[in-house]
Structure formats: structure tokens, C-alpha cells
Amino acid sequence: MNKKTRYSDAELEEFRVIIMEKLDMAKRDYELLKDTLMNTDGNDVTDTSPTFKVLEEGAATLSKEEAGRLAQRQMKFIQSLQAALIRIENKTYGVCRETGKLIPKERLRAVPHATLSIEAKQNKR
Image (cartoon, rainbow, N blue to C red):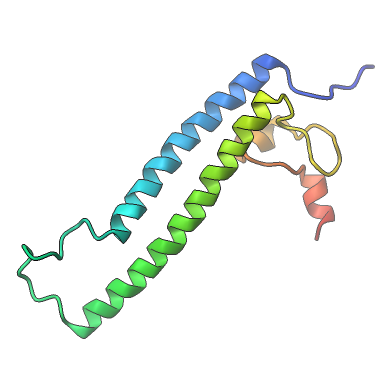
């Protein structure tokens, strides 16, 4: 029996659609986080509410730090999805970078930017 070494063009197209949907959503989420960091929700010279309360400032600082971490993580996710699209173009998508075997479709549907099979990921521990 001939063992499959890569996904067919039709299968790659299915994954491309999944990745594009996730990429669009991830970019929207990133923009929301970026807007939070840029403080586009007010607090400028037109905002006359008392904003110099110590507790509020501390909470706002923590919130901005958390938003910054989330934005960085989101950007990394976006880059991983973009790299997956390149692998689709190169027809190397879905091939485990450790074992060289195909990553199961179920895993790729759940984690479309995966580059390791479960087997390889468990061996890294």
C-alpha cells in the first residue's frame, strides 16, 4: 500500500479556508487589543470625569499590561497562521517537522497552525 506523504490540493484548500477564517478573526481581535492599548476609548481632554483616582489608575495600568501581553500573543498567533498559509502554498502543510509523517486532519482542524504531530509533541517532553 502506498503511504500518503502530503495532503491533496483539495485537502490543502479546505485547510486554507479554515486558516483564512481564523486569520480574519485573529486580526480583528488584535485590532481590538491595539485600540485598548492606544486608549481610544476616551480619557482625553474632552473627558471631564475624575480620572486621577489611585485605584482606577492602578487597575488601568494592569489592564493595559494584560492587553499588551494578549496583543503580543495574538500577533504570534497571526504569524503562525500566515506561516501555515505559506506551507500550504509550498505543499508542505500538515507534515510533521519532526517525524515527517502527516499530521492527522482532526489535529489540523483544531490547531491549523500545528507543525508537530501529537506523537512528536509528546516526545519533546
